[in-house]
Length: 95
Image (cartoon, rainbow, N blue to C red):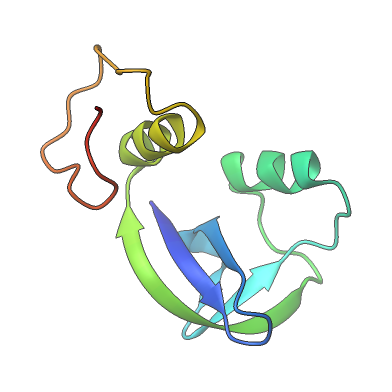
């Protein structure tokens, strides 16, 4: 499972694996590259000596819903045919 969190210090929003959540805080990797951070999240890389940040948890969801929402946000004209979701109302529907 993943969560959408808002970091209270900068009001940044991110999608993170549950393993990075600690109460109302979230571990964040020290990597500079956005690609490397995304790889760490996808692999659910366990936090090592990462900094812990205060967050507000906005939403929880599974990987299929995450991929569906990401596809719609990147290219709303793409319709994902082969994925079956019971509820996609949290991110909209294909147009």
